[in-house]
Image 1: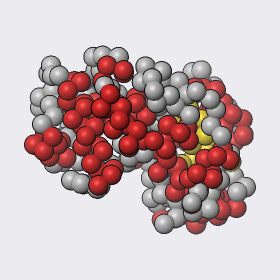
Image 2 (image 1 turned 135 degrees about the vertical axis):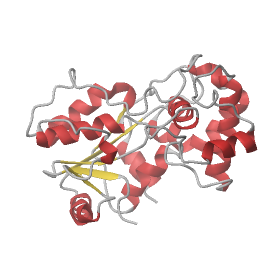
Image 3 (image 1 turned 60 degrees about the vertical axis):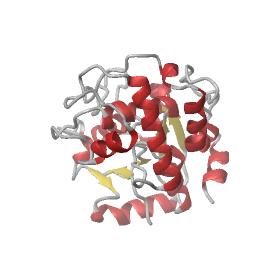
Image 4 (image 1 turned 90 degrees about the vertical axis):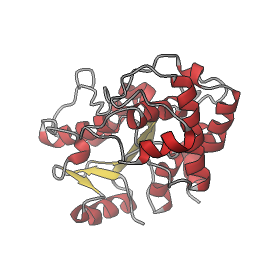
Length: 272
């Protein structure tokens, strides 16, 4: 199994477990900058050098040694489940991707056909009933997560706790789990611990939101998308995310966590 989705600076100053839709592009770029004094030209997910990644075979022994040795500062970043799944819908389902095509080829036509969702036309820019369409998408998400049908869940909407847990189960331990909603505060602690070769000013670093502009703009406040049934589905899918990462299940309008993450609790709950 190893450590899928794990990145490490070339200087081995810090290890990061990527959680999709949780500022991962910005975090990756900061890690790259820390060693090289420049940002990667392009989407950091495409970088094949300048950063160790588990997906690159040559990096695996180094990452494994660093993670299992517990000598390198390890962290991840999480996000409110309500805003994360909404972001996945607008970016991956309604949006046109960087390559000018729909995400994952026949995925969107499949959901349109089986769940009756609307995605704003061929370019994702036409008017459509966002709330109705999103709620149908959420039903699809539940089916993929709970029943693996009509397909396995995608990394962008599978539970954060699943991503976070593989790192623990295989022998890793987090020093820090912080919130996308308090990004500067959390990342500042990481930067302090990684002692970067090149100084990092979090106030001036751009936000590398690689998904921005792919899809239509969200037309309503977050809470408008979640009626009683949608919230029931959210609990069914993301119960562990709400519990482990301290987000407010009862109020979709409150995107902020209710308290800090309890690392011991996370390791106990997600380590079995």
